[in-house]
Amino acid sequence: MKLYYFPKAPHARKVLIFLVEKGLSLELIQVDLEKKENLKEAFLAKNSRGVVPVLELDDGTCIDESLAICRYLEALNPEPPLFGSTPLEKALVDSWDRHMEFDGYLPGQDAFRNSAERFANYAVAGVQEPVKAIPALAERGMQRIDIFFKRLDERLAEVPYVAGTQFSMADITGVVAVDMTKRVNKFLPESLEHAQRWYRAMYERESVSSTYVVHK
Image (spheres, rainbow, N blue to C red):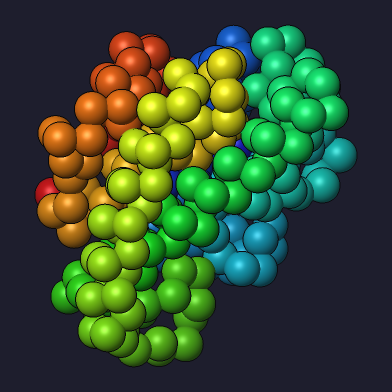
């Protein structure tokens, strides 16, 4: 199997974290998004949406979307379970993973891609046609990030990990979401002690610390 990725791509990082947590090793092929290699014919043949990550199986089948890739790998390598073991655990992981994605990552992405000058005419990832940034979406994204931080702290006042008592895919999506907000200079407030405790614990994991790329 081959994983097409780019180190600065948040969704690709989710898969990289997952691989480390699972102790799995795949052939890694870097697709340079900054040089728009993702929009060239060779890559579009593997994923017409022009985004990473993409998992290419030995028979040539290509799977995109980080969650789908991780679920596939989990089915092949169930230990340690990162999507839960019991029906309830699995439901909670799915639920909280969605919270992290929609309440945290997407507002961060909106704020970033609609305010960064280099995306002024390229506001939607993987789209070849010009798509202009919308400043109002960036402003709304910044407001939603504050709401996300508060809700994350409230959740982590109840449990040690996002989905409950065990580290899971929801934590992976969560820490990537928090790091996404750094791109627009929004940082997890020190006053949110529960979220800060969790965030520090995340960076004590080799999977998280080793995959972080500083953005300039």
